[in-house]
Length: 129
Image (cartoon, rainbow, N blue to C red; front, side, top):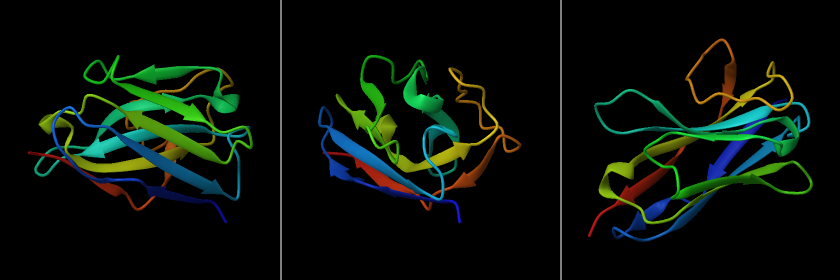
């Protein structure tokens, strides 16, 4: 059974850091790209970052470039999102999702439901003083 479980969210002041984890089971990063998405209250879910199969390529939304870093562990079962210099506008529920039809070396942060069919339950990130 394919499963994704996020953790690591919390309350941090502006300028702070958090590291989110997405533990995957039933598959590995060898067979799937992983995307991180977030949804703020009253807003649509938006793509934040993604990592391709085998971790060979990454993409970031313009709003987080230079502040967020996505990576995978050697076992290819956990994907991390290191978030630095957090801003209040980064507040939201963060989800990881699996794209099992991606090509090696490619990933997208477009919330394509035909592509990202497996999702975690989300973890809350709140940036506030």
